[in-house]
Image 1 (cartoon, rainbow, N blue to C red):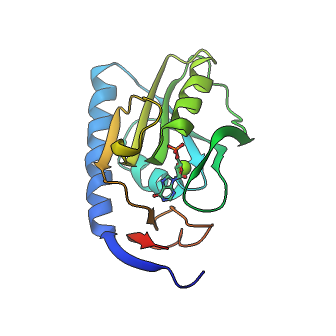
Image 2: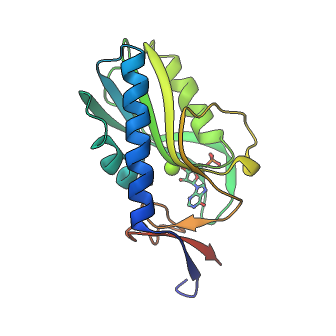
Length: 177
Ligand code: IMP
Ligand code: MG
């Protein structure tokens, strides 16, 4: 701890551009599909910065709810099972749901969340993520909106943590531990 080597990976400005573009694409998709309001399901804790920035580029009435899922123990590899640590508080029934996650890695977390939400009678379910690591996928998942696909690198900052550290950084860094 404290000796991690961080290398700049995506600057705050590049992240901003990705959010602007994602916001536009999501808005256009909603307009094309006659979606007039959204329920954004945000995964705690990592996606809070992404969600806060992204939704301000989606000029459509929306509600926000949070869920905390856990599949990672300490460190950089998944433990394999996903469990709900803090559940949703808003009714999903009849809503157009947009799931917001900051990064999709093995796909287990998002697959679990898509299934959970889909079982609660939403009108539609879509997924937006800032980053995705396709080469790490263990469970196939459809990601409707992806900011950027990246190689198999562990990244921190802008909500992303390593053992709960670095979430507050404005830029995203790759970390060698
Ligand atoms: P998955 O279930 O393996 O797709 O993991 C998804 C979750 O693991 C993400 O929402 C993050 O919270 C965490 N995660 C995956 N890759 C990284 C990373 O490179 N840095 C920080 N957290 C990560
Ligand atoms: Mg997450």
